[in-house]
Image (cartoon, rainbow, N blue to C red; front, side, top):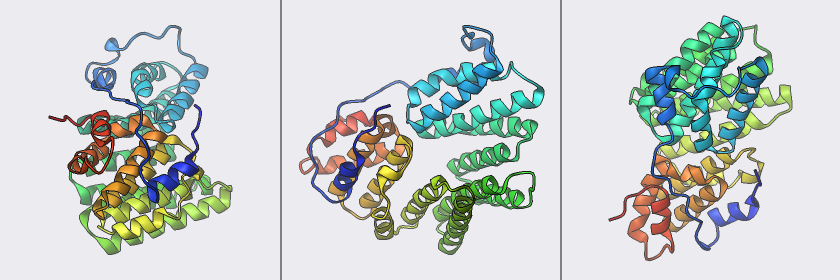
Length: 338
């Protein structure tokens, strides 16, 4: 995938006037039909693989699935996931099959969240956790618990959703079978998810405490591994925490310290700009909000179909005289304009 110059993009999103419109990427039909068929009817409704699955092909499909998600190629991932899950169920020992299936279902949960199907979020999260426990890998179990937490949160059970990931993080603390850097990185992700959920309840002190715990864990993991990926991810969660607590100014202040070009994937870049847009909308700054949304679309066109973007686009329509191209953008985001 060819990357675009995001330094200019980031500056445009935060500080400079709107310049032009993006190409249309509208899509009207949900790409999740195949996954829904797999969940409801089993592998009989999934196209058979062209050749007999092997360890190598299943491993390759896992890597490809992660790469497609990171590149925000959600349509391609949604189309391929059902057959990849079916293939993973056919190869290896019971534990190997469960582990591979769990990892694919963890990705399926994240995909359903992106596309906005809460019913499938709940079902895929349950499948992920069941398979992860059968697979026996503590890190995959922890990620599945994080996905279950997301499902509970999207159903409105915020206290339970927070508790799930806090308990999972505490369990990892004493699990000596997991390498320290990996354990710390996973705990950072779990605490960051808990902080975001706690922020949705309005519990300012608890959410700030959790995001600090997440940042400390990610920093320790970075020192142990030499990688910055977890630290960057926690910063994006902190941005969301400030937004959820109504602290738009703090969110924008934090955003100005983040270089989008340093974010390693198109998905993260688009998520950053979307959160910036939400903060600007909360702050009552529609022009900056619109610029950030255009930057998100530039980073990952399929991100604009998310519910959060659609809601923002609907709000921006009242400013259409001041925002050239906003009606076209809203259409690309899936807003039904009368």
